[in-house]
Image (cartoon, rainbow, N blue to C red; front, side, top):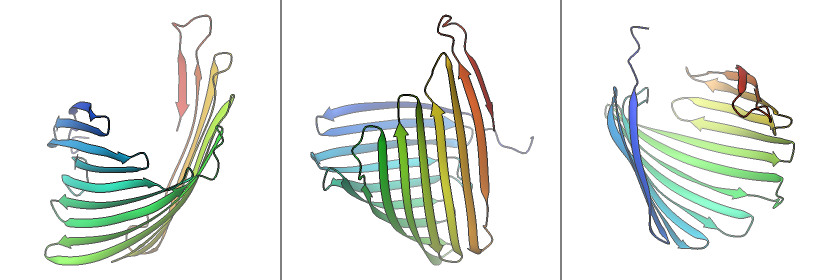
Length: 231
């Protein structure tokens, strides 16, 4: 459409291991909607502790160009349990906000085929819009399963979100993926995403997407590849 702004972007980045315990990365972005950069540092304090910081520029936000600074850490308590914490400072053209996120990930299975994890997050978002301050709290709980076998791979994630502020929203989100490992040149994939939002407020959007696809790569002819996908 003539009313849609072009969104062509060029990105160049660099990542380096400064020390055995210190890693850095940086990206430069330039496009029709502006320019910016992303960068981060990760410090392995010891085998079970990592501290990190990130700076990110979002040129595609519907509320305008945004800048996010994040400070966080991961702590591996046991082979199965990991806790994490983050503080984010977000600056947009229309608002400024801070958010605190913390949670725990637990993997009860060390099986090579199965990977099961649970996570809990709580965020407090203070937004300042036109000198008016609003507080939004968000609680998120999720459970995820993944399987990787010789003939098939699959992933399922179920997430529940509760947000309180100017609006009171509850959202249920599920993400599902399955695909077969290539056999006789054929592989199949399936995808199902669904989100349902309820509560009081104007943003009660629901979303669903289903996709099915295939790929054919003949073993005897590596120059021929056939792909198809329906969404």
